[in-house]
Each structure stands twice: as structure tokens, then as C-alpha cells.
Image 1: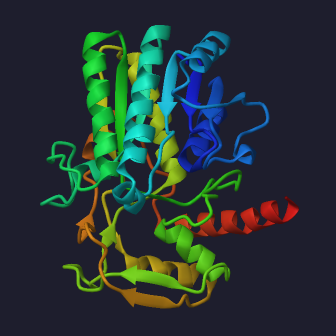
Image 2: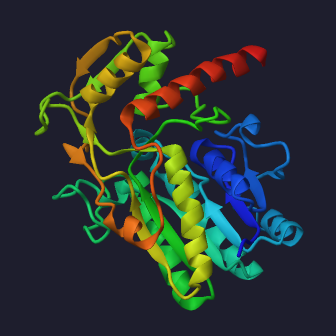
Length: 333
């Protein structure tokens, strides 16, 4: 059974892909976004956009009434780890306090299902990799803590009210819509593959490699990169699972269960673009683990999720195609 869905932060990177995934699958979708980091062009013209903030209870009540929303996919929030260290109160406001306001509005309106965009940053620096959902959650920065606090609020709320939820803990999200309808559009983004394709197209003069002495095969950090469209598909399947079993809530890692080092990623970008990106070797950043790879057995056992783009060069090629299109969009603007 399909229900009307409100996507918060639906004009942003991952949110806009979720909107497309829902729409492509025949769901009724509406978006709320304050357009601070999102882009109006990322939302299809036939999807209602409410420009506003998720802590605006009156606006949320109007959206729920007008759209009949029975489910929420919550992507709105701040995501830059170093900024969270420098400005923790911003993150506890945007990611935690505003999420509390959204959850309260959802309960008041009788919204039954809630999908939450969480993060592997809730694990901090795990002692073991791959990381399971039962690994200790010990965030080392306010970003991770702000997300963990929202997971806790959802768990407590689900015990007290007729609401079930799924917290999806992302690893490293990358790539873009295969049809180049949307992608990572934020200026000054810090995602490695985004930075690398910008460098390949001459938008940056090179890529900094932070740390070359990790306990990994080539000394650079290893991460689990997941294509954003595969991630969006997981959200739709998770919502279907919540609707099918309304007494059940879920927490699942979202990754492919394998990792690539920074240098392996840059080599892949070189191959796809037939260019050589300049690499600048720099010191480690505080709090970066040697390796962060998901144990994804739970999501594969729980959902009929079969990744379609689990190939590093495919992820790079889609990111590159979007970067070129983004240049055209901004040139027209």
C-alpha cells in the first residue's frame, strides 16, 4: 500500500534522489525545504514544494492536512563534520532540536511511519570493521552525536505512540542520478568523489589526501562508498517494510560492505576521465578512522534490496556526468 510521503530536505543531495525514487515508483510526494543548502531545480515540477523550516509547526500541520501525509522521509539537517566541531550548537539545533519539532508535529498529525537519514558517524571510531548495527555507538563529534540523539528520540517516541521508524545509517554516499536529473550540487562540498570530479574538470587545482600512514594497504583511509540512487532505493523499500509491519521499527546500515582507499578512488577518477588529478599529501585529520566499512547483512536480510550501481567506476561516471550538467545549469542561470 502506498501512502502520501513528506520528504524533508527534498531539494538537497540525498533527499532529491529519494524524491525521484518515490515518484518513479508511483508514490505521492511533497517536499519541505528551506533551500539553505538545497536547490529548487532538484525537485520535479509536479512535486509540491513548501519553502520553509521543519521546526515551523503551523506549516507542518498545513502540509499534513493538504497532502494527507502518512509517512515522512527526513533528510533535512547539517552534515559537515569539521563545522559541527567548530559550531556544535548549530548542529544540535538543526539536527536534534528541529528533528524533535518534526517528530512532535508528526505525532500530533497521526503520521504513522518515519524514515530517518542517520549516519555511520554514530559509531565514532569503531574497534572492528566491518561495522555491525550492534557495534557501540560512541560519536566523536557533534554531527554524529546530533544524529544519535535523534535516533534515541525516535526509539522513545515509537514506544509511546503509534509510530514506527527506520533509521538508516549511511556510510559514504556518492554518485548521482543515472539519468542526470539531480546530483551533489553544493558549492564547496567535502565529499571525496565530488571533489575529485571537480578537480578532473578543472574546477579545483587538485585533491588533498589527508593522511598516508593509516593501517591500510596503501596508507590512506578506506571507506565504503554507496551510490546515492541505491541508497534512495533502500529508503523506498524500508518504507514499504514499515507499512507492512506497523508494529516493527528498524535500524540498518547502508553500504556495500567493501571499501576503497582514497588513492583507489582517485585512480578510478583518473581512469574514467582519462586524466591525472594532482594529489597533495597532507597530515591526518583528527578523528578519521583507518577503515570504515559497513556490515550490510541486516539490510540484505530484511529488505529485497539489490544494489544496481555497486561499482566504483560507475559511481564516478555518474558523478562526473552530473558535474558537467551542473556547469550547464549554472551557466544558464
